[in-house]
Structure formats: C-alpha cells, structure tokens
Image 1 (cartoon, rainbow, N blue to C red):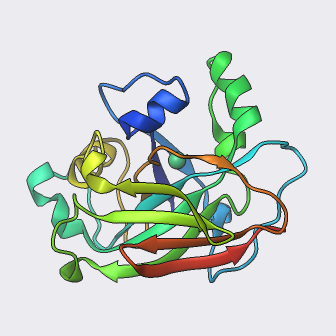
Image 2 (image 1 turned 90 degrees about the vertical axis):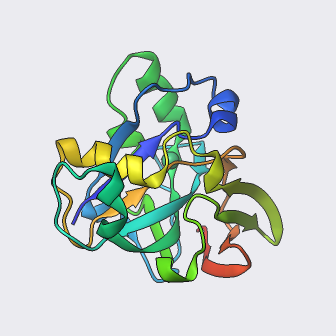
Amino acid sequence: MKILAIGQNYVEHNKELNSKNPSEPVVFMKPDTALLKNNKPFFIPDFTDELHYETELIVKINRLGKNIAKKYAHRYYAEIGLGVDFTARDIQRKLKSNGHPWEISKAFDNSAVIGNFIPVSEISDVQNIEFHLDINGKTVQQGNSKDMIFPVDELIAYTSKFFTLKIGDILFTGTPVGVGKVQVGDRLEGYIFDQKMFDFKIK
Ligand code: ZN
C-alpha cells in the first residue's frame, strides 16, 4: 500500500507557515514503513529538534482507480478517519528553502499515524467534518473539512491522474491551523466530532 498526502490545503495553516495558497494540490507520499497504528507510542527520532504534529482527516481507498473523475470520486472510499502527519519541521524548513524534496522530513518511519475509521454512510457531509487534537487533555488543534482548499473528491481526481489508487491506500488530506511541537511524555487524543479516533503517547 501507499500513503498519499496533501500539503497546504487550509488557508489559515498556510498563513502560520508563511506558505502560499497553491493553485493545484501539493502532493507528497509516504512509504508503508511510515505507518503507525493501534495507538502504539511514537518515539521522537534523534534527527530532529522540532517534531510537529499535523492532525488530518484521512481517507481509505477501497477500489482500484486511475484518472478518476471528480463526480465519481466518492465511489472510491467508504471510510474516513483521523491521523497525524508527523513532520520534522526544522528539516522541512531547510529543504523547502533549498527547493528540495520533503521526504526525509515527512516520510520517515512511523510518521503516518492512523487511527480508527468511520463509515462515510454515518457522516452527513464529507465536507463538513469537525475534528480536533487534544494534547495532555487540552485542545491544541481544531479543524473542519469545509475549510479545505481542495475537497476530498477533487484530491482523489487529481492524485489519480498521476498514481493508480489501490485498495488500502490512504490519503492524508492536509492539516488545519494550529500545528506545534510534541514532547516526550505527551498524550495525543484525536477526535472526529466527539468520537475518539486515536489515543497514544510520545516517547
Ligand atoms: Zn500534513
């Protein structure tokens, strides 16, 4: 399986990182070795001093597809979940300023935390999903899919022009405003509406 991820998909987040709002989705990938599931602890790697959480809605692809039309994109997923796109911000900043690819700051081992999924049939509007992250019991990041620059179906149409989507692939849809650093001992709890989707510790 592969993990597709979208950068700079929320206006307020782009402001906090001084990024431009893109005219087309910003796409990057993570390998399967980036997956961290089942609320296992995340160990901060020693190559970074600025490890950031990015809480994101994630979509699980359930059908093989290539060049998917936006109007049919909803047929390619039946579950939406919540994940964390861990980012070594210090390394990413350096790479960005040199115009280099992001991979080592974004796609390292265990950088893609995957929580539980909710059937789309239980969600009234995919583009109106509230989600938030609590660290040590305090809400630090809140978002709503209505604020995405490129909605989920458009992301599927766009990414499938370049990559064949396969059953089990995961799409990270971008982070809202409020990213920040994690520290050893932190407890991260993610919610879609009031439903807990993940709960794990930083070590
Ligand atoms: Zn992200």
